[in-house]
Length: 499
Ligand code: NAD
Image 1 (cartoon, helix red, strand yellow):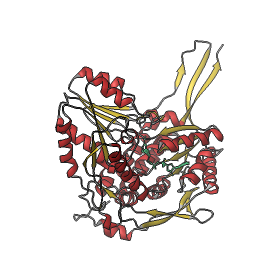
Image 2: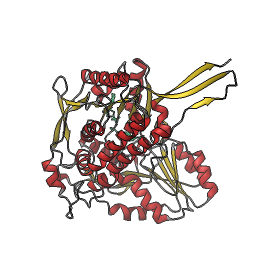
Image 3: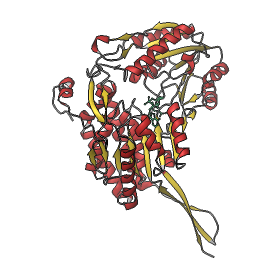
Image 4: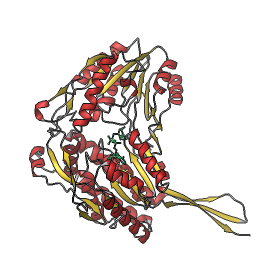
């Protein structure tokens, strides 16, 4: 961690960085067996950051075999809970001790502002591991009320080998949401980071081993989705796939599971979350600021982004005016500049996707109120202005499809019923928010909204103690909180005859 009084020069540090780029299998870094690599491109300037090991089936199977051997060997799966707790607490401390290095890797790899990586991503990942570590020796099993002639216990056991496939928008945090409960429950893990942002996952594997996680328990297989990801989800020896990513890929993962060994699957997928502002909104400035951050934070690359602003038509102009004031202060900048609040889009393909949706919105007849352009092009990187569309109709593609960029679609309604109807009329159901001073309206809306997370008079409230996940095509199963253990444990009933 930087302890100097002068702030670090992140560009100097970036120039000196030599990131580890190999897979981590059976406790050591190894190249892909066929020697292949893929280019990891830095979104800030479009230059190659590193050539990273491109794992394929043979590498994934080696990692799965090492995870299986470690699981069967019992050094982790049978370790007393209090000991496992100590190891994971040390792991969390090591993440914090390497905060600057991990934050730099994260920012270089996916383009988010260094200030966010330092203050949000690395501490949240560490806090997640710490929270699950602390939970390990506080969970009890059950005895069923079967009567005096028998004893029936209901115990939780680790499911075995878990494959985790994660996306690029919060590489470290999304990985931590899997690593924490997977390892706390005693499983072995094979982690496949996104090919767009593999560097922090590769780095923390060594920190896990340094903390005392036994060799083979924590493996990392960087690689492409249709090779490494498919091999992991299709493996006959993986017991569970914990997936975070797009709905389209989530459907494929389910098919691979069905065609192989019927492994269990948990899916955290996409969203098109409605942020509903009623005419009796208690604080329009607060709502405007929250609405802006709900779509522009992390360059809009957020599964739970409030990408649909549903506003009572009577206050629309007032609210949009205030959102524009906030948005204008969020001009995209150099991700390594500590004052930058909006960084670069992850890669050229995602940039194209975002700009294509801006064109689509215009062509569909929506009014572009703000932004919509690529900026800082001379840097070689991928930057898009905060963008706001007005006059969006519920049937338009920009109102129905996940853009995954800083593009807000504004729709209007006449009453609460119409708002709820529009809000629920998409295939997704991850998050939703409602702003009102009326208690009944708030409670009714919270009940009626088909979403895994509902916010009242706030957006994106967050804590490791609460479940995170969606309804409908946003997936199933939950990350975070004690409920995450449901994905990574089997329930066993044991009958003992006392008759
Ligand atoms: P993606 O689906 O393209 O990729 C996600 C992961 O799946 C990557 O590691 C990728 O390599 C892998 N993958 C791709 N094709 C695969 C295949 N055929 N088989 C197996 N694995 C494959 O998603 P992305 O672009 O990395 O991430 C953005 C998406 O993630 C958005 O839809 C976003 O909403 C979603 N997301 C959801 C949550 C949540 O908690 N619900 C959180 C973050 C992101």
